[in-house]
Each structure stands twice: as structure tokens, then as C-alpha cells.
Length: 196
Image (cartoon, rainbow, N blue to C red; front, side):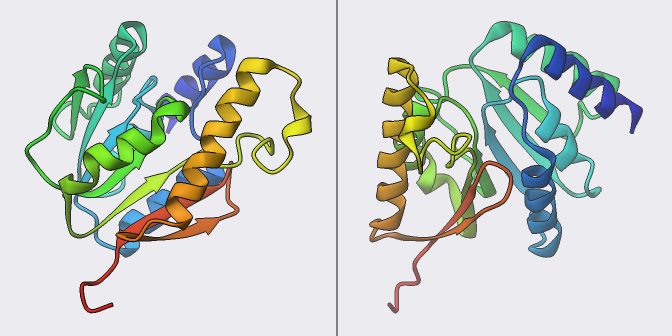
């Protein structure tokens, strides 16, 4: 799709982080294999992954939330460009304070890395019965495994918060999480069955 190539080129030019293709392909594959019909994306950026998800099949709806007004505006332009306004609900708000009453088959966390635990805890009750929470950037360009890759103080602080989230997922008693060395490392968390 030419529009997606244009969106990717714009993201590269403006240094706007969008999902790596490998990671995005992986989630798209999950959506198709598990008949996901509703997606909540936390962190729209300029709409690249929302468009990829919404284009997968006719009966899917994506809700996406973005705090940055410029990115939100650009994302809406991109949704219109791809003729997907009826399949994507775009919200300009802070995901940490916004409340959704509906439930989703898949919740995708790809916003402020330092807030991942808060996002997870806030939205876990918005999952459908067999829904999953997918998180991206858990390697953070390799720095989560090797902190010596950066000497930047604020980056180190951020990486330590991702390491804390990693530990939160591994020790969570309510959810079981699988990790995949795909893209920038992805996790899939699903509620443990009550019988366990």
C-alpha cells in the first residue's frame, strides 16, 4: 500500500518512532490467527500500526489513544488518507487518566515506556475473557540486556524502568507472559485460568 510507505517515510524523516516491521507483522499474524475483533492501542504516534491492524480484515475495529496533539492530528490525516475513519476510533487524551468502559480482545501498549506498569494495571480489566495485553520495545535497542550500550543518564533511568516492567511481567500472579525475540522484543500476557 503506497500510503503506508509514505507514512513510514514521514516517520523516518521526522524521527517519529513507529513499530518495526517484524514486530508489526507478528502482531498482525496474532490478530488473524486468534480472530481478534477489537484492539485498544495505547500510543498512536502517527497511526502506522493502527492502519496495519485495521486493514487486516473487515470485522476489526481499532481504538487508539495519543497524548501528543501534533501526532494525533497527523494520525487522523493518515486514517483519512487510508479511508479507515469508520474502522479506527482516534482519541486525543492521556491514557493514564482516560477511562474506557468497553472491553477489547487485544490491548497493545506502545506509549511512554516509563509508564508501562501503570498502563498494564489500569487497562487489564478492559480485556475480554480470552484477551491479551501485548507490549513492545522490551529490549529497548538491546539496552535492557546491556546497560553499557548507553551513557545517557535519562536513557539509563528509562531502561531501568523497562527492566522493572520485565520483572513485573515475569512475577505477575494474575497473568502469564510469553516473551518473543522479535523486533525490539515483544511480550504477550494473558490471564491465568482460575483452575490453576
